[in-house]
Length: 94
Image (cartoon, rainbow, N blue to C red; front, side):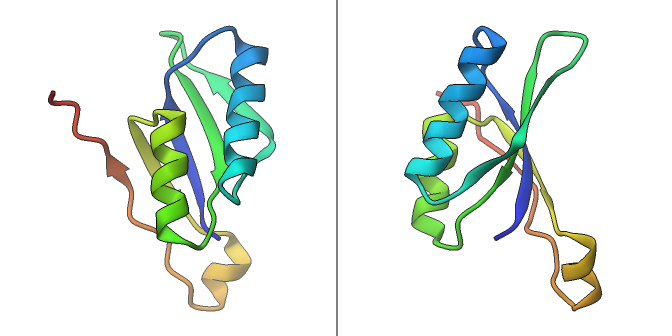
């Protein structure tokens, strides 16, 4: 399961964190240790551990409403030869 920093639409911080945690659980992923952060513009980011199933990943990303994500791999996995997942940006066109 790869890690991803996801840029997400926001609402009140604690409420949004709880929503993201629930969505992740529903799709077989998880919000990593409640890691949700806001930048200087108020944009929210969440650290999500994704499920292995691509269909579940698509559902999770869609329901969270992620606009972009940065794929990461744990240092121990990298040492074992695993590559990080591809970072992506969701097409914003209507």
